[in-house]
Length: 383
Image 1: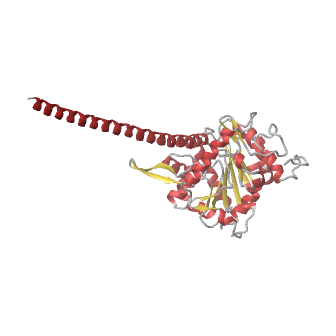
Image 2 (image 1 turned 180 degrees about the vertical axis):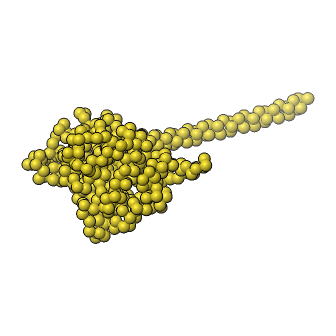
Image 3 (image 1 turned 60 degrees about the vertical axis):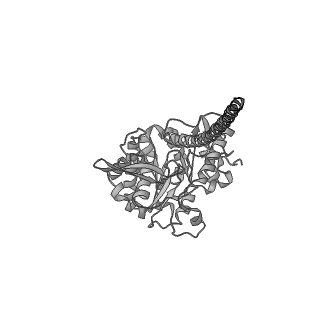
């Protein structure tokens, strides 16, 4: 009986030990899975933060014609620069348009053109005629009056006295909506086609245009070829839904050059855009994808006609860190801009001819650097 009891006790001990071992293994497995899940969650969190940063930049783009203006404030802080630096590094790692102006600008000119061959369209709204447009009229437009056409949404006798028939009332809404923006772009396109000029270049009323550099850039491309030149504001092609009729839709994605930095289209390509852009067709096309004017231009050119965007880093908008533009490189840029980001000033970093208080956009200082013979420029420009 004792032997039987010992045997029974031994079997129970073995079974108990086996059970304890199994329980330990289960606990270890659960702990390992939890640690792995934490690591995955941390990685996902970093990815989500990056996407939110890109989204916040796009949200700023929707306010390009807002009432925000450059005013008093401190210089851009380190956090601001770090934000844009991180964003710039991220953009360099993602897919980019396949064409670039870098190789072309190192080659001999393909065509002998002058500023008279370029149709420069400036989009504005009546409420910004004094606060924004007057600055452009005093600076770069004053040197290129015959090439510049101003597209607005209200009559302004004072503006007409300065630029004459080149002040064009589009009769579009003054609202900052995709419909109103596309309405103005439709008029710009039609006026360019009527002009017979070789190049169509669109800019906003917060852009400074260095027309000398613009002419040099465009001279490397025959205007009869299909050319679409500018800079994207997004890190990847935009995704949209194309409405085909009969309640049918399909997804499309394409690169587009942001209107906030400016872009140019050759006449050869502009003529091919006519079925989707001339007359009232541009508005209809914009409604098919329900996106603003610059996106619609990219849709017609890249998605419909299959012509890729040629990227140029010589165009600049308020959506990028403008302090990264070196003063020594200013004369090489095609467009510049200014603006505000999180109540911080985003401008070209230069001493220039005027202090920031007198020249918050830095456009007057840039103009005096490029054209020191301007009557209102100081005789000596500070470095």
